[in-house]
Length: 111
Length: 115
Figure 1 (cartoon, rainbow over the protein chains, first blue to last red):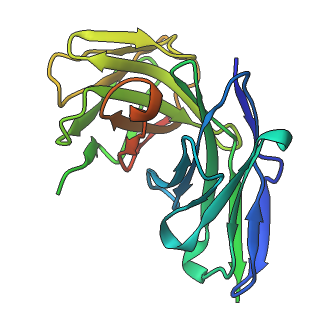
Figure 2: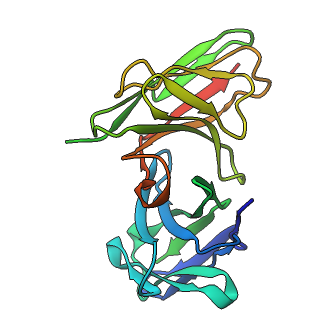
């Protein structure tokens, strides 16, 4: 069975600083990978997805993620965060027709 | 605008009562899902439905029931058999089940509190 690990429960960054959220997955074949964002008390919104092809994928709100097969990772990055990026971020892997989510990373932005 | 509507947003229940959470989508999606979210545990799949009149148990189906009589509707009943029902419940849908079609659209969620 597949699994997803988000090792950072909570990250705090200053507004304007760069951001990297870590995601490691476990799956025997080539995975489909996703990043979702959740504002407090709301549902999840898709930021970006990787199915195949270019390993650097661009998403909404200026986010990007890089698939590294050798490291089983799919880290999310943003060069300059905005206060509105404060939210919880979930990495997910689709394998065997089942979507498995990580436990999430909560992002706090300080002025 | 197309989307998923969940109701109610907040719900309080006494122990021993069944409650039903509503989920309606106007995206013309075939597949629908119910997830439970608890702090620090991510999202766990309760039930899913690939098509009308069909549904399957997810990872934590005990104490829950669903129906899928219409394409656009997938209500979730939290029964009195669910031992720890206080949680945030998320409904989602996708165009189809499996492979690249499995990009989920989520509703805004329903928060259930058992008193």
